[in-house]
Image 1 (cartoon, helix red, strand yellow):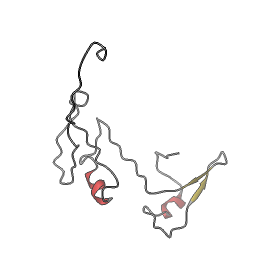
Image 2 (cartoon, helix red, strand yellow):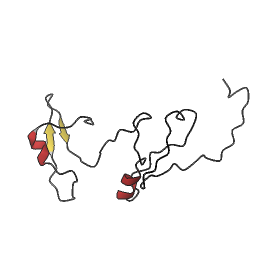
Image 3 (cartoon, one colour):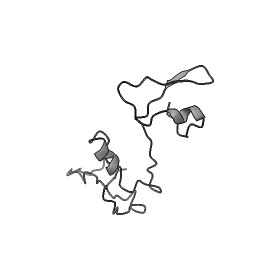
Length: 110
């Protein structure tokens, strides 16, 4: 279960944004009786063709020591209309286009 909206209960503002190894786990009970555990390690960022991350996640990648990955995609016919060049100093890039040859024939062309 991933909560996409902010928590509005005042008690939630007392939770740390970063957890440490010796922190006590925080549990929550839902109205249906099921339990959740709070884990601040996951932070969802909006990254769509219309509203993309300016640096492609480069800052997050450097802050996590590479545990997270760059989310920039190479320019293709699918995204060329929304693709923009980033001037952010923390911008990261895709690994480029792979060097792959694909034989086109009657069996793999629809």
